[in-house]
Image (cartoon, rainbow, N blue to C red; front, side, top):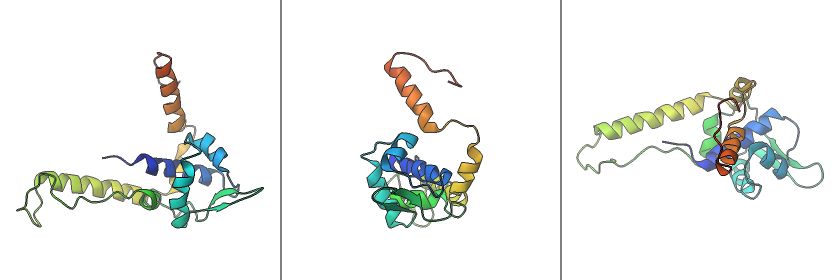
Length: 159
């Protein structure tokens, strides 16, 4: 069970905006900071704007900003507006007989999804920004790993 790449990109962008309150960020600035393609970000932003999480201003001095307090915006709010994590409605084993008494696999998957949604729903964007400390952003780590693989090198922890 994973969060989609689009949801991850939205989380990166919203977190970056929360780290830079009141400073409109252009698509290019956000692309460089989050390591997300500048051509893909506007597609993600459309969902965030529609949900009222961010706003965009064109022209000189324009850019994207958060419209809601990161202390109240949860990670689930962000994920749900771009690619919601949905419950499994049909039995994964295609059993027709279990009705309200879910089969063991269906029950485990339902519980796992509920736990992920609960954790994302109780973690705010501000929590993530606060807890980041001196950690390297995951997108920077992934970029280093990708570069190393292209060059045939291994990557050591702490690089």
